[in-house]
Amino acid sequence: MKITVIGTGYVGLVSGACLAELGNIVTCLDVQSEKIAKLKEGIMPIYEPGLDSVVLRNVQAGRLFFTDSYEDAILGAELISIAVGTPSADDGSVDMQYIEAAARDIGAHITEYTVIADKSTVPVGTAEKVEAIIREVSGVQVDVISNPEFLREGHAVYDFLHPARIIIGTTADDAKDRMLQAYEHVDCPKLVMDRRSAELTKYAANSFLATKISFINEMAVLAEEVGADISDVALGIGSDPRIGKDFLKAGPGWGGSCFPKDVRAMRHLAKQKGVPLPVVNAAHELNEQARIRMAKRLEEKLGSLDQKKIAILGLAFKGNTDDTRESASIEIIKYLLNHGATVIAHDPVAVVAPNDLDGYELAHIDCPYKASEGAHAVIVATEWEQFRTIDLLKLRKSSAGDLLVDTRNLFDPARAKEAGWQYLSIGRK
Ligand code: NAD
Ligand code: UGA
Image (cartoon, rainbow, N blue to C red; front, side, top):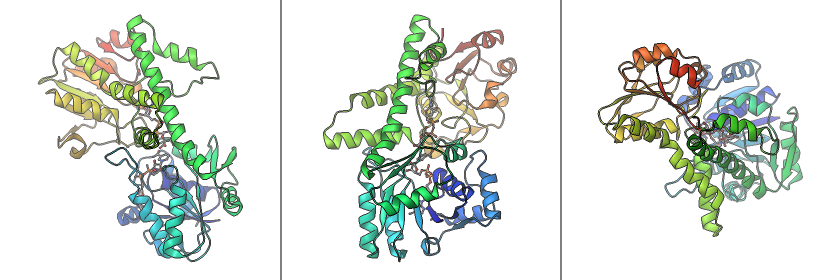
């Protein structure tokens, strides 16, 4: 099938490359011409393990193309998938400018019946609005369906090709059939439902997962007080299949480009509709506290953060990605800076721009041991695999202080103690 994917970010580029891997002929479109120029040269605009080889293989096979021209991208497309950003607006609602612009541009170039699949995470009712915009601009009959995406950054290629389910939100048979054909070679349940249910499913999934993490973070605080180990508790409850082991890692709160903005959007929608969401609201509030809880514990230990040098290992919002959007690491750094500390950082791939730190020029050092030189304390903020195997003795020797704050429970407390650290981790004795 001839498919166009609009937006070549984490979702669009992965979807485009994987849909080509499944045998479709795919054109990826983005309004950022520099991004498209790089992709044509085989340069990936994001760090996503395994993506480059899927892109290269499908470009070479003549199944994957890149363009910045709507005219070229829309011509002859049997399915158009929208994967542009839907960031939060200042009031917590969803900023729909990219979706609306894409809808208008599709409308300006479409000439025949096409199915448009909304893959971006969008408020309930968006498919109807996008359909109205396209019909109004073009006068052409189209079906807009909701097809939310559930991939995780860092595992995006695997997740796209091996999803737990594919949601197809439409009541139009032609549209449903095209979607089933595009995903023909993906072996998973394909759940067909109406558009509004599909749109709400996406927000409900992210809010549920975020709530699950907030719950375990709440238990972690209690575990510290009663002398229990949160990893054992997580294993203990997660072994019950009704609860499940996934998403029970205590940490510095949920961040990233999705959970925070989607929970905000959910709360905003509920407020508009006059529906109280006490569970989701509590998960959000707990998360605000979880993000800086370990920085506060460090402050208590040091007496004050003023004029202290703190090394932070990990800037990305989780391991295996270069994405720092709403990273807990940034919240921790802001807290340290606001309380008079200086911060030196190391991350295997991610960088934080001054704009995200109220103008502060963060020093990025390419080695964890060098970053920790002369530091009063070291904070591990991201669970990069290479941090797990770090030489704790070498790290201790390069650091001036003996406080190691592990917000991801990467190390064995006994090993950290042996290496000479006062070790603070989450939900452990
Ligand atoms: P992103 O910011 O990485 O990429 C969006 C891309 O869209 C950018 O390259 C941008 O230039 C392009 N774009 C913007 N307006 C455009 C237009 N009018 N025409 C063509 N291109 C345009 O965003 P993302 O992380 O890929 O997220 C995209 C959507 O998918 C969001 O709604 C997000 O909530 C959802 N989602 C994201 C993830 C994830 O892991 N990142 C997972 C599931 C769902
Ligand atoms: C998340 C969802 O997992 C995807 O299914 C969804 O498609 C995506 O959001 C989205 O809608 O964009 P992602 O943001 O890539 O994916 O990252 P996750 O692996 O879910 O992690 C989100 C946050 O929760 C991170 O800050 C992570 O550190 C934290 N987390 C995750 C925990 O603290 N504990 C856990 O057990 C799991």
